[in-house]
Image (cartoon, rainbow, N blue to C red; front, top):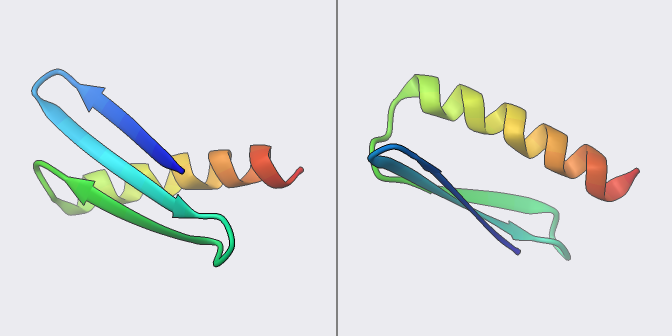
Amino acid sequence: MPVFIKNRSHWTLLVCNLKRETWHFYNSMPNKTHEHNLRDVVYCLTRTYYH
């Protein structure tokens, strides 16, 4: 399941493998702040999907 996020000139693509329950992310401007924010997004998406 792909999830595309665009913020001004920056983009992120989250890809979820539902069978394996894994997430991979691709980021046009990688840094630690973005990783932290993505963890929050993944948490919310996972919580919504599995509950």
